[in-house]
Image 1 (cartoon, rainbow, N blue to C red):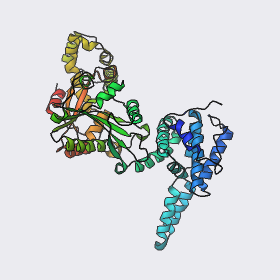
Image 2 (tube, rainbow, N blue to C red):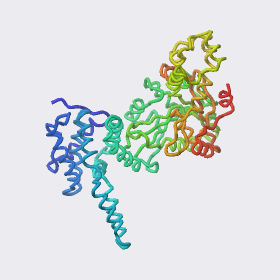
Image 3 (cartoon, rainbow, N blue to C red):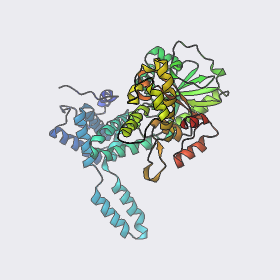
Image 4 (cartoon, rainbow, N blue to C red):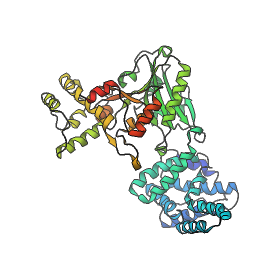
Length: 472
């Protein structure tokens, strides 16, 4: 029988847990079919019930959980969907028991009220939560659950019956990954090769194309820091790359040039955060990126007290998709995107219909006439997109920036300081933002005030230069 190999650590966990599965628990993997047909689904359901019954001691409990986990690892995408659907729907809260507990609490005399409240709390806890928690005790069980949530996030978009299970798992992971449990480590060229390989695989902003590229990012004028969790000591959770420079960086090409001369970090006045990558998809929505930046600033100031400026060199990932939507709205009778002067200027050098398709290519910026005409237009539209385009706030909260990177840094108390023309001329940079990049500036004495302004009113704090761009 062909065995389906699941992504991430799943293929290694099965062998790691093999020793835990003994005569104390049935090995569900034996003869189980990857698509989990009805007979095998019954076996899995029985094993879930056995895990909840908790017969025997701790060793037996771990063996049962390991057997269930090994069965999950064997399954293909359809089999995992069926496995998770059983857990979500058949091990949900018993609503009749909740109703009875509510009625009992309402009728309970004062002296019995605490016991009635505890009974209600117990009734409100879905049995699937206890199933999920049992994986926590297994070797690399936390990583197993993180990867399981990544799959649940994708599956729940098409199968809403899985959403409550995904929410339960997210809440568990939020408690387990409290920032107080995290360890900040500096990654260097001397770090274990397994960690370096994972950084190359997980880098999501500017791809690490070679070992020379990675070595350049770990040189003496650079720093790379990552958060780790004690239950996942070999897996970075989120990491940030920093360049130590004499001034604010304006483009990523120079910053990542492996042939550029080595800088003297002792003379640096500016720390540029040029890439922040979440390494674990299953921890999406569990925010500790803001704590990472704060901790890294503390560490850098301790090592380099001459640092005065802390800023990012950030992409604008949603700009061109937003621009295309605005153009479609304009064609349907909406407000014109360009001013009459801009439309007249661009008409002489390029076809501007649609502008988003024209500037999403990688050739126009080599033509001086086109680039000169486009620069003021794209700068103004980018400033509008970052500073003024919003998502509605949830449940009466203030609106938030439409661009996810802008929202992250504005929430953390940065200001939009400078837009950088042709800051990223890679194929990816041109395709998603017409090459635009932005410096978000963290002024240490203004962070709290900027955060409150954004959180309470949804207003981005802007430099005078960005304000001028908005006025055209």
